[in-house]
Image (cartoon, rainbow over all chains, first blue to last red; front, side, top):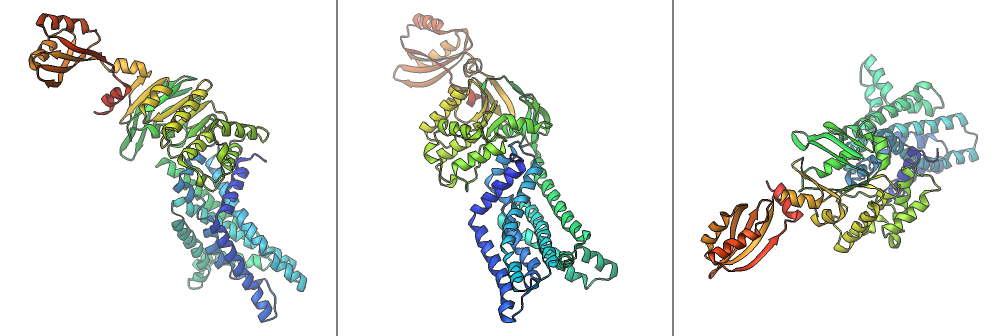
Length: 238
Length: 308
């Protein structure tokens, strides 16, 4: 396990991400915004809830996750290091998986910082523990889905900014679907709502652990990771 | 060790490599020579598994480059033309990651890293970020990464490009030390490098192999005989005509004429024409002021083959 190329490469990717100043800028902005979202109702309304921090999270993640994943492949293409990686004894799917795990490691680290919020709640009152766990599963599911989208966007171009824009755009479409569904007729509305991230995010955040929600996050992640692999492989044959 | 059969690569409609066939034996150091855009880099990229061929096949260390790419990649050390490196990493970190990604056991790689740091002269920059290194040191880091796992085959794409003459010499010396144990395929623009570092040279032009042999053999076989520089005290045109009539002389070209002197360049087939030239000069009473045999350099061969 120690010498598993996926784990080794994921650690290297994480190490490179943690060496990049942009990571810290994005992380600090995220922690300030989420901190403010959690703390302001606590002082203004003397009320404490995870909802104030969780509800805007899908929108925050549409910016945050593509910003953290934008350099994943695009930087390799731009610097030419993909040639170094691709001629090491590592399979392409292992490279994609390692990039995904590294992104999830970084997002996981950021999310871990926000565990202070439920801890504060536990100190102040008796919140519903099940709902808290559901909320965090939901956050990680959303992060996983968006990380796969961000990595796929990054594999499409050698320009990080373009990768960010594509990633943000796709994530934002999934974010908007739930709202668009209200304007659509019957069957179509329920189908679009099923594809929307908000439907699944809110269900889990309420503490309802439904396998459909978990399958949604997992299948979305797998779909975009497989697409990334297809994009990386196709570049070789062009 | 490397067997290439009818290897072809097309980029859209342009043909980068055209049905190339050759074989490299274990322990050989082979230089791939050719002008820019000849197909050298494409060839090396295919042999390392980075690019798939459009047609044909190749076996490296007895493994097919397409079907057993992972086995091929385990056995080669590759220095790409652009020498891409992770700028954010320090030299030691970069070597350490390479060792681990190559699956070297954790007990073995610190020793291997120390060895390449020593052989590539990286001791003074080992803790520095790659972003802050000079071109020469970056090239050495790339080379160190390529030889770290002690591969059977080394594929080096222009290993001395961008280096100053001293650094070029160091890299060449390093290749010489590796050559006893490894098969090396390197591409280069520098003809003297091919002449000194390689046992064999492949000249590639417009995607085709146009010459294959040792540097000496190529000079002999492709120079089509000999060249003689002759200075005579004689009328220029008359001397040229008389010389062209000597059996074996292919061509006589007037290079310079001044007063009653003329300098001619004589090209002949395989035979030695010096004696016949001397006899003719005696018959005509034209004093020979200079007669120097000129050898064809690898550069002449290269120009002759790639200037079409």
